[in-house]
Length: 612
Image 1 (cartoon, rainbow, N blue to C red):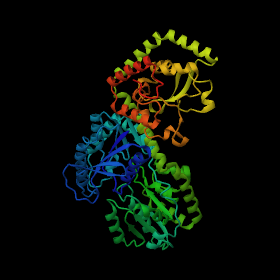
Image 2: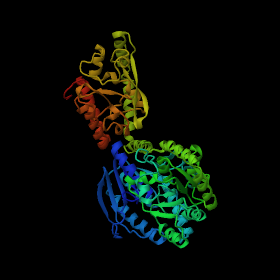
Image 3: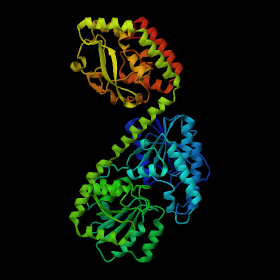
C-alpha cells in the first residue's frame, strides 16, 4: 500500500507538526510495511532559492520530495505568505512525481496545500484524506500585523472545499471534530479523531538530578518550563507576566526551551524588564530530551483565548510521558482541559490570567507531594496517547480508505459480471448441488455444508460456504491449518470435490451477495497458521503482504490459484496476490476465469505441480 503526505514541515524541522509527521511516516513504513512518500519543504537552514523545484532523498524507508522555496521570517504576514506560496508551487510540481499512491493525505501547513494534494489524488486515482492539525482562518488571526476579511473568507472557502471533498477527515481532538462539523459542515460519519502523541518508551520519567539539570544549574531550583514551539499561539507573554509577579521567589526559575517566531521578542522583553529568573534554551535533540524534561518540576501549557479546538497543543503528550505536573492556561473546551480533568494530572487556569497562573505555580512550589501526585497521574495518562497506538489508528484508517478506493477504481462491469455469472451458475448447477449433497451425506453422515469465518474486503469478516470435503470437526481437532498433500482430514468424496473445485460451488452465493468476487486473493481464515521450515508454526498475519490483500474483494480464483504450485508457502502465494492487486483489470479477470474453467475440466486443482 502506498501513501503520499503533503506538508511543508518535515524532518529535520523541529516544529511539532513536522516531528509528528516524521514519526508517523517512518512508523508506517517500518511497522506496517507501507510505501510512504512525503512532499515537504526545503531543509531548515538550507539557502532558499525562491524557485519552484523538487529534489528527492530517502530517510528510514521514506521517500522525501523536497520542494524549493523561500524561508523568510514567519512573524510577518508577507514572509509567511511568500514561504507558503513558493512551497505550494513546488508541491504542485512534485504531485506529478509521486507515482500511483492508494491514498494522498494533506496536512494544514500551509492551509492551501490541500489543493495541490487533492489535485495529485485526482490525477492518480487515489483517495484523499484531509488531516487537520490546525483550523484556518481561525489561526491566521494570530498574525498581529495583518487583518483581512478577504483572506479569511478565501481560507474558509478553501477549508470547506477540502473538508467537504475529502474521503475522510482526521481531527486531532474531539473539540476540533465538533468545530469541523459545526463550522465547516463536515459529515460526522467521515470525521475520525486520532490524537497526537508522545513515545512513552523514548520519553520516560527521569530523576530531577540528572546531567542536563546539573549542566544548567537546575538541580536545586524549582523549574517551571515551557518546551516546544515559541510561536504566536502559546501566549507566553502571560508566562512572563507570571514570572514578573514571582520575581522575589528566588527558588523558582522559568525556562523557555525551544525556538519560534516569538522567541526574539520575548528575550528582548526579559532583558528590558530585568527578569533574571527567566532563561531561554534552544530546542534539544531527542537524545537529551528525556533529561531536559526530567529537570523540570512543573510545565506550563498555554493557548490564547478563542483557539480551543482550532489548535491542540501537542506538547502536552510529551509532558504526560515524562510524568510531570503542569499548569494549563486554556479554555474549558480545550482538549488539554478535558484530559487534565479526566486524569487529574495538572491544574487549570483561565488563559491570559497571569495572577492565577502565578498563584498555581506558587501552590505547586509549596506542595511537592501534590507535584508528585499529578506527575504520577500524568505518566499513567500518557499510555492512552502512546505513539504506537495512534500510528496504528492511522494505519487502520488508511487501509480502510484504500479499500474503498480499490473498490471504486475497477469498472462497475466487474460487479455486473460477478452478479450475472454467479446468478446463472446458481440456477444451472442446482441439479449438481443435489448430487453432491447426496454424496457428501452418504459418505459419513456428516453435514453437507461447511461454513467458516473468513476475512474479506477491508478486514471485514464474513461466513464463507463450501461443500464439506473434510471429516466433521476438522478445525476443532487439528486447528485452521492449510491443507497438505494426502491430508488425512480430507474424505474420499472430498478428494474428488477438491480436485474439480466442486466443493467451492456454494461460494457462488458469497459472490452473488457481494462478500466475494470471481477473481481476487483467496479469503483466509482469521488467525490461520501454516507450517514453516523446521516444522515451526507461524501466523499468516505476520507474513508481509497479508494486510494489503484486504484492499480488494477476495475471489474464488486468482493469479496464485492458477499459476502458483499448490505446495508453495503462503508468503510466496501472497506475492502473486500483490501482483494481481497492482495489475488488476477486467480483462485479466476474464483470462483467469477462463483458465480456471480449463483447470476444473482437467481435474487439476489438487495438482502439486503445473496445472496446465
